[in-house]
Length: 336
Image 1 (spheres, rainbow, N blue to C red):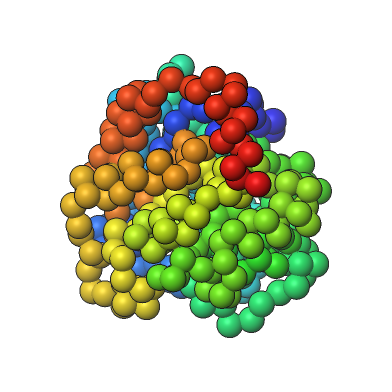
Image 2: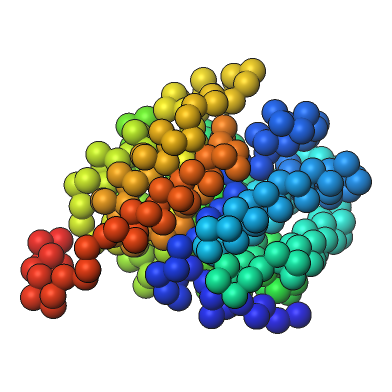
């Protein structure tokens, strides 16, 4: 199979894209499904799980079409790597088959929803080997590259358009994924999760992490994202500015500004106003000049994504015209 949407990827232009929300929390809280080890790919084994995934994806796809935005369709594979499969008693052969099932499912769904004004991109999701907020053991770059290469090879074989590393907590694992994706010929995205102080769980600053990945890979990653953090956590960091902020094209924020531990142990998601979160995205758009990808994470749902998409589309329409060349050069010089 050959990926046919490579010329429609988010990095190929300035089209706006929506993403989904936090799949695992939605399945647990809204669908009341048991998700062992929070491994969402296991729902592919049941009729009930597939029906839930249909409802989930179709809502977001229709929202993107209605707002004439692109849609990044993500596979439910954040915990479909070998470490988690072993804990679940799933063999490598079965795991590969489930990757194929996930991608074929999204291919078929795309055919029924995609329009000319709303291209759908099939995104193969990679997650951290350890916990997405508090890694118990960190890998070196070589180990991380070897570990994640298997999934990347499957995504390439089954014709995903791109791969994304979600909830990255330390830079070595992100570097390993970027290097493995380059070897596998797959466009890659690195998405870091942030603590309440705007830093990675490892303690490294976001700016240093992005610069390190770019420096050590010759800017192999197509772009960077921030996920599973509330905008209040990191907007002040972004306001510091610099060239590194231009490498961030997307944000998938969670609803709650509380720490990961508090929100993860909550009985119910923190259901705050979709309009309020959308206003936070509008503010982010003022400090992230290349932000064209908007989505959600823990606690959000299709209402939040719809409000975010509408707010960001309106903000983009009302932006002033591009400045003259002299002004752009002056702005670029100020980043040095």
